[in-house]
Image (cartoon, rainbow, N blue to C red; front, top):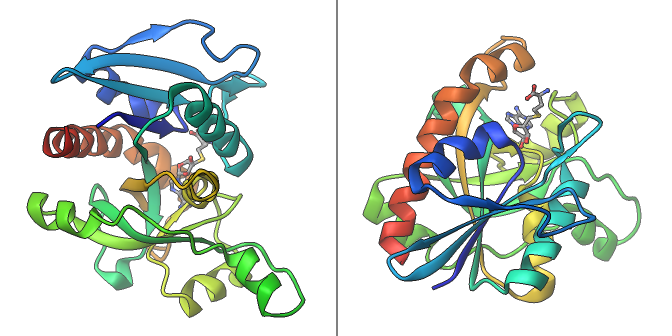
Length: 232
Ligand code: SAH
């Protein structure tokens, strides 16, 4: 099985890249800023695609995730896309910093589009996720949760309301965008997320995120490695 990881930040991917000793193929996606790292694991190709940088910082968010995912699918033709990274979660659901979750669903939480049901459905997204996610989570002992995606790191009341109404558990900035592109190409997508911050902890999110980014990135690298071993 040819697996392609799509990851937003270099810091999130680095422990994983180091672990597999994958090498960068420079300018593979030029003129796009996306970066390709490639390795051979158990005789199968393993690709890691990063969003890349603009304005001197790693590109996060939905637009960059769509570009990276579309470029990855078109150029690499993977059997499975895995969006791995970090997320916020909720203490009230029993989440703790550093927990690793696999997605059982994914949608947007910040797209408020008036109109009929069809517009509401499009706005929320609710894309399919890899049908073996529950099996993998059970086999490897990971939690499962619904990822909701928006374009901001902070949590505004209107977003909180949509997350609550839809029973969202993990808050990120790329998952639904990656899943949207995968839904168009009918390529299965799995999300592996580690918790950097608790949205209901009262802490300042950016401060909590920054403090826990390295630890959560190591946790997600470990999970990625175990999922690869399980699947490949
Ligand atoms: N300025 C930050 C930018 C990171 S944005 C920095 O210095 O690194 C946060 C990234 O982590 C996004 O890619 C997003 O997917 C994820 N993330 C972690 N916690 C999040 C939260 N509470 N809400 C939304 N995204 C979160």
